[in-house]
Amino acid sequence: MFATLSDRLTSTFKNLRTKGKLSEADIDATVREIRRALLDADVAVPVVRAFTGAVRERALSAEVSGALNPAQQVVKIVNDELVSILGGQNRPLRLAKTPPSVIMLAGLQGAGKTTLAGKLALHLRGQGHTPLLVAADLQRPNAVTQLEVVGQRAGVPVFAPHRGNQGSEDLSGIAGGDPVAVAREGLATARARQHDVVIVDTAGRLGVDADLMQQAADIRDAVSPDEILFVIDAMIGQDAVATAQAFAEGVDFTGVVLSKLDGDARGGAALSVASVTGRPILFASTGEKLTDFEVFHPDRMASRILDMGDVLTLIEQAEKAFDADQAEAMAGKLASGEDFTLEDFLQQMQAMKNMGSMKKMLGMLPGMGQMREALENFDEREVDRIEAIIRSMTPAERRSPKMINGSRRSRIARGSGTTATDVNQLLDRFEGAQKMMKQMARGGGMPMPGMGNL
Ligand code: GDP
Image (cartoon, rainbow, N blue to C red; front, top):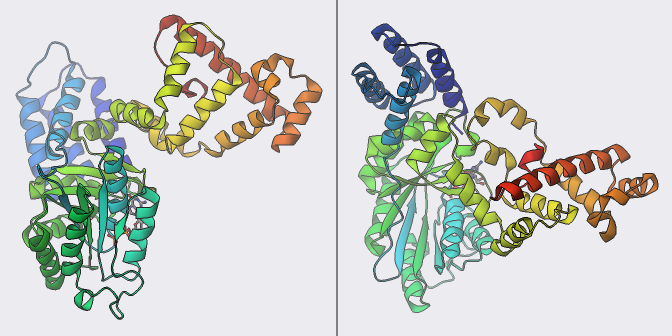
């Protein structure tokens, strides 16, 4: 996510770190580097111009703070300006006072709307809502089936009268596969079945065209959405701005969702969308799995880009992944000074796996940007291996690993398809984690699972 931009900006700041005081020439040189980094990352030209102008002006007028050195001051200014082009503050999803709330998704074909529909449904379900997905994309072959699949994964029902008959005869009684009628019927169904949120998936085209806009506008007029979310693929580069503007004029969306942020090293186009259209970014999509989804916080994203880490998002994901009871039991155990066992270790590793991609997670920690290469080589299958080894131990061995002698070790290695060396390595790592847990118990506080071992 924004890896290139992040690398370029942090190396620019590194050059500043050695300077005691910044001259106008230093500031100009820095601003030039920032401009180049932003342009290379595909940030739209007018946005770059406004951004660098603001940074230069503020750096020159040197809002001198005794607490910060010149390099830190520049970082702070760049951070503030990044937060500002990303929209300032998080804007929560607007729901209707009287349900059902209607959320309509718009965007080009392949932008990630259908996937997003599932992610959003899962997210809302997690908050206690009862969403209904409405399959009003009758254009793309398979869009209806795909929505049904994501609905099933998210545990959310799908209103799909055109199931299996896209482009052919209409079995639903709704005239001619009309997406506007589907949206209207979907809303009526949600009312009748007391769903409190309706998410309408609409058709996209490969490029912006008049028919597409008209259809989206007709659906909008039929269901009066509380939110129209424009989904944009962060990988489409400079076209992002023109596409966003076309949709802003055509359907007048209320918010933006950035999708495929995982896949893009540049991604600057996505950074331009909020400031070019004046609409807030509400969510970010970061992978193909339904859980690869985040509420978008401009300040946290700016911190991530500047490699200052996004500890808050990390904590939120950890909270979601952890069973609260489990975490409480663990905390109680630590407080009482009880031993941290291999069983606990395994439990933590599994929680870690639930947390999604470790690489993604570690990327959110401050300073981890420099470790990007090391992270690329990190093998998540390692956790599977650890799990296999611990599962091959008897309960007694798990409780007191000290009893694992040569013959037990070979049995465990055989059982888990690993080697005696692998078993030894795991036991060493476990001992390290155990020590860390003891320290944490003395110092209070709950450590991140497994982090001490990486
Ligand atoms: P739609 O045509 O707008 O409904 O787009 P889809 O939801 O069908 O997505 C198009 C393709 O992009 C599919 O293969 C998705 O799996 C993939 N996709 C969607 N969102 C993401 C994302 O955040 N990251 C990645 N890597 N792929 C995504």
